[in-house]
Length: 475
Image: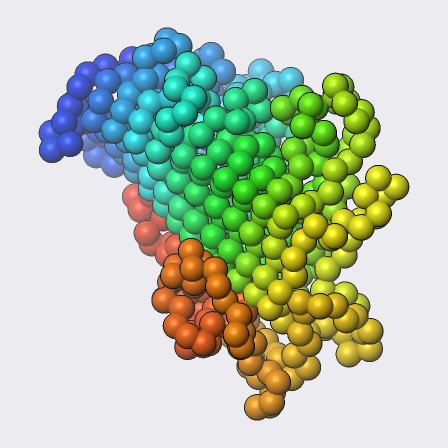
């Protein structure tokens, strides 16, 4: 079905039907850039192999809380369906106060269907509270992943809000945080997505966050609830903008590897890497689960303000059956084969000490980490090797490793390695790791190759003209 050129006001549509992989049901703009959806908007979808393509949502708002939902009713979910090549720009209920967190609306809702995809869309200038994209697994099977994919979208220009509730993306929720959702979020650009601390709020299990670019975005990827999530091959560039951050780790069995963290200014819970203490397992699901069995390896941190272990966890507001008000430390975790470079720091990482957690790093194994910090630093710890002639020089968008000498400068892991899942995966440049393995997100044979980031001409919508992000390209 083609939508003819024009403005469709108060667009309230249910899309139903069952296509096939080769002959999907298509709802498409006849001409890109000439079909506008405005006013009170409500779009619902059910069935299979449905594609919505090329619509421009503007001058409108969600008629009943969420503008576009991958469901009809509360239990009819599509599968193998797609939202692509659409624009969502500056949508907000005109009756809402943008500074009132009670005034919320979301743009896209994914639910318990399977293998749905949101790709190559533009999402810009969300001013009011609420999430741009959320995944809500309720009314679906608890032990079967949805396997939704969110890829190659452009998210941008979201101003900071003073309170919680302005995430760009939320995967799951606290009530169902022990469920496996299994979403893949890959190769998106997050540009100036400053709504709140959690740009991507993970609240479920078995999700993959891979190959995304976070550019001058005052927020982070937060493993807020749920276990067994993987965050790999992402690039975080802050350009020393206040509150730019990287990854915050809570819960068990999280994997963070092959990520590139550059010029991030956040501290505390907003540090380039923040690994938090937890609370007793009898505490509510919306509290802070203890960090257990985290693997944080082969990452590169360049000129970041802080890495912090034992980040402060509030004990107030949660009623626990046992150990009320007691923090639980990070345990059975590993911080291995990372590079930390910042010649303004006295320590490569900081810890938070409390009465109940006097040593936040006692449960972390440190091994194979290389660092260069302030020349007058007295830091020394097993698992960290000083590389005094190691240097990084800015070359276009990224820093490039530039050893200043030939001795004790290259971060070779002599006799180390031993993490096949990571070492058999491409490094942050997208190229294989070959022996000898070296610390950091770029292996030695790939020195001089910049981290792989999504190309602007492959992300978002090509037919729509919006303010172009100031992302330099590498030589």
